[in-house]
Amino acid sequence: MRVSVFLGLMLCASPAFAQQRFLPAEIDAGGRLYFANCTGCHGPEGDGVAGTNFSKGQFRRGATDDELIRIIVRGIPGTPMPPTGMSEGQAATVVAYLRAMTATAGDAPAGGDASRGRSVAAGKGQCLTCHSIAGSGGHAGPALSDIGLQRRSVDLMQSLVSPGGEVRPENRSVRVVLKDGKTVSGRFLNQDTFSIQLIDTTDRLLSLDKASIRESTLVTTSAMPSYRDKLSAQELADVVRYLASLKGQP
Image (cartoon, rainbow, N blue to C red; front, side, top):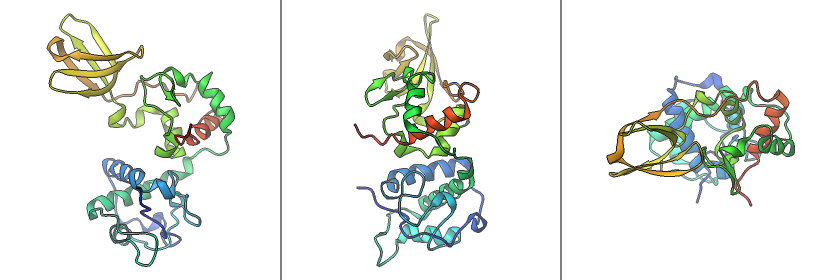
């Protein structure tokens, strides 16, 4: 059961209160904790509870990083927000993510129509070539059926226009060179003592025997093309609105 980590943090903090600089890895770790524990109540944009908006730096209690960390760890007695069970180090990464949310919120797309976005994603955008939505589409890229629960609108837009800016570990590709000289590339799924599993660019699930592999390399760049020059600003906003609406419902 997800718990609401930040219920009641509102109106007293802003980016001006940020106490330290955070590394990208800390922000990413905090984002994972936030999405695992907080989006059930607060949503990916941080505005799921009336009167709060983390993307705008609106908190009820706590101004400094230390104060926010203390609230996250201990909860707020007499309110629906319980202690989270996080360590202070984990809570600090969540604060890092909250600060990053505020810093990037201004880049979120305005407007957008989910119905039009669905048409663009299925047609001109060719999203279903690599991604699946509600069981339809390819598997070379991650499934998008509940992407609206996992990513903020600003992050979705960034993924569309600059997909190489952030490649999450679960979305990495692998390049494998077999002993016969053949090269196989695709989305990395898993590996064990004897094999490497991946989905190749033709949407085939492959399990390659390590005995047949000369070398393998995890690819740090994204195979996804940028849509910056392929879709208009309105089309991008429409697609983002559509993706943000995908919450895993049938």
